[in-house]
Image (cartoon, rainbow, N blue to C red; front, side, top):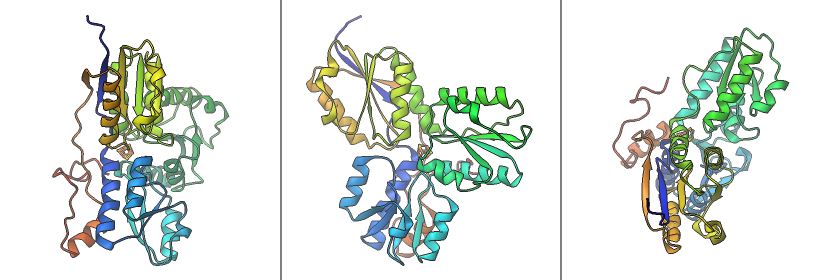
Length: 337
Ligand code: SF4
């Protein structure tokens, strides 16, 4: 086998259906209503996406109270607690909810299990926006479990009536370890009705696992506050890659990382536009890593319809209310319950 430098390029990588939908929702809202359009929190956790939308007239705010009365606000892909909808109503805001339908699915599970008076153990990262939003659906019923090491401190009211749910962007392996320890403690623990860790998170981790052992260095394109991107570096290191780094932009790559490296793995988080990966590949080629081999772990074709309230207004204005491609929505795919 030749030992010339090479790149293994993960597929799938980058944009998932929920991120695509959220970003297009802000773009279409800007076209339809004109700037400024307010966005509560980062629409998706990616620096480049946020900066690009800011240049087009989006204003990112941390709290609903920062949006002027009567203005238009988009809620991010990570979802919001019901109290945020109430705040928006009190300010007479026009809201467009870009919560990913797969996050909404977890919210609905939380509401349903809370209505049945279960204790819900929500596996996720403390402070992450998605976890804050999901917890807000049933605060008295939900206890956060931030990884396997926190299981020991978890208490429930009735060990016979406990279910676990999770954030959508966790490490599959670590989550299963947390569940194993929870089940040791609460043998009657129920599983969620379907996987909460979403297809995009799972597929991106799967691709990294397939190539990790062959890579001396893994470069993951993604932002530091992007949970699924951070997980990809961890997964690579756990599965045999010697060194791994998360970068927002190609310029952050330090040539010293290439010392003694034959194979560089490249992938990107679910909130990362492909152009940033192309920049990384171009830089790698300049350093002699021009030979790029794809490693395909799964095919993805899921596409969500735009938020209903936006579709309605686009239609009324005679504008295109479709996503960029022509696939069916999640409802059409029968995944939304
Ligand atoms: S990572 Fe998964 S849950 Fe999050 S926006 Fe993408 S598809 Fe939705």
